[in-house]
Image 1: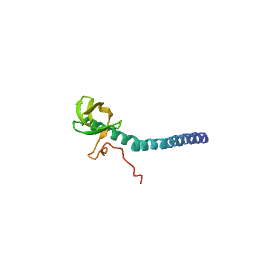
Image 2 (image 1 turned 45 degrees about the vertical axis):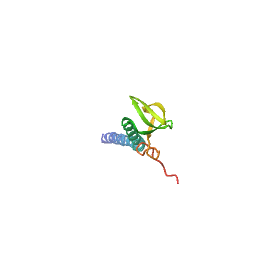
Image 3 (image 1 turned 180 degrees about the vertical axis):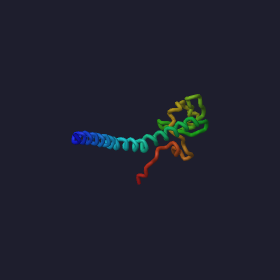
Image 4 (image 1 turned 120 degrees about the vertical axis):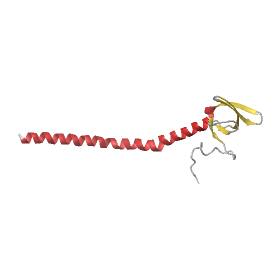
Length: 121
């Protein structure tokens, strides 16, 4: 009778080991998700928040560049529509969402809204 009880007990131990093995099979998937979150998702969310804050802080006189590549100065704002002066007495209206970033005095896109540049040299 003790032999039967012993056999049943060892079967339960094997099931417990199999359960731990199932958790170990999920560990690489969980690790991959954590790496993707910290390397891809989180930085993108930070950049999107920073860009949204930039769009909310726009005001007259700020030099900007649009997503289409137009450079100009904001001369008027009406809700979601900006009037952009791209040359002397040449004004266009654009959507606030079309703004890619601000410009520095040298004409380059400002650091806070620019993509990180890799040094290729």
